[in-house]
Length: 255
Image 1 (tube, rainbow, N blue to C red):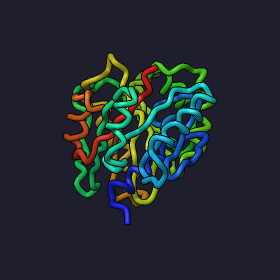
Image 2 (image 1 turned 120 degrees about the vertical axis):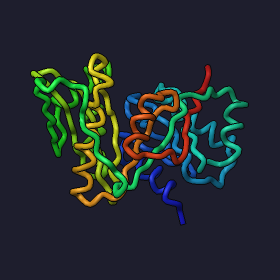
Image 3 (image 1 turned 45 degrees about the vertical axis):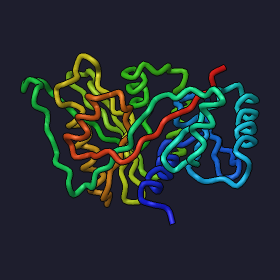
């Protein structure tokens, strides 16, 4: 029987899906045209029976054939020897991140405090895929608009109800965020605030909007993933009530 944290890790694969998945003895080889490591890596959540060295070689052959780098996602639930073995095989450790969770009964909404009261701040919540929202996300994140078809396909493949949220003022987009509601969980992705509007409480208010929708739709727990080297985001999530549960990181082949 898997633990709650392993369940969350499994949900995260469905909430940020790959476009193609190939299985090799429990490992999932995920690809999505190279958009984000999360959707273009080997998920090692499930254990294996085969020789690990041989499995790694098969993974490398698969990604070489599609001209993508071989990337492994490691968690505390991966085989204990795998991380050290990949290190010996010249895989570089990258993007150490944290999964943080919060029981929604402990959620304390926070409102914006630093925006001038004359600003007309508007939140737009959409319960469907929105090209306009994706364009806003690409602009704020610096993602190439050439990836929009891939992002659309990934959002179509999401298992659960999606909620796209944007915050705007005077026709300027200040922040965006995405939520997925599934199995009484609400997961948050792509929380991005325009650089010139940070530290004004906008992200906190946007997350509040999304979590309120989650609670209205029966969610009892939220989880979010954040780079460990992003202390401002970690502080924000902790202030909202999220607590660190487990780390994950990537190993990328150093050619």
